[in-house]
Length: 223
Ligand SMILES: O=C(CO)[C@H](O)[C@H](O)COP(=O)(O)O
Image (cartoon, rainbow, N blue to C red):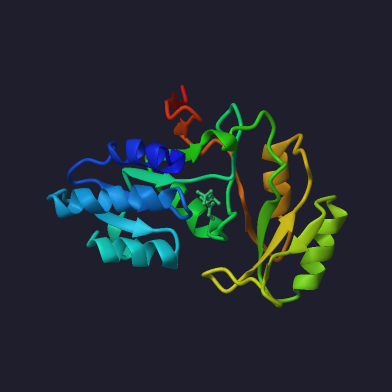
């Protein structure tokens, strides 16, 4: 039983004819894109944007119409994965490195549906290293600023090179174990010159669909 697929396919049912849809990134969002792609092949009429080059490629392979960001306007719905989800629907995202585009797309969507297997549900965010996207210019200074903030950053690597995002930036993964004040940290991080954005998604998710070990679905909506 593929829990990621179960959660993602439930979310894909929310996509309706005529909608403008944001497509997430990662191994769970993958199944949502595939299911939406199947429905497009069956005649579903939508327009979409993708949150990464990988999702863009996958969507096009399925024949999902991808529209330039500047031409699509506001989105009805975005379906994306997450690395951690807390009881208030706050998230850590960016394990796949797409956090910046994911946050921009989520912020321009009427509804953000998060899909995941049950292991992503946590009481407190922070065990998963928090990704912070950093511009390459003077990146060691930014790294030091993250250290001073107590974030314990480590550069994400791709072999022996620093990992580069689709935007040509670096990722510092911050190992904090537990984040006590996620909303405040989100603001503090984004105020550091050199930080483009970080993987904390505060008050952004509207619906969380988790597939539990027995294959049942735990679907929650933010009131
Ligand atoms: O934020 C993301 C990519 O930047 C992903 O949604 C997140 O890492 C979850 O990925 P997966 O579904 O593969 O566990």
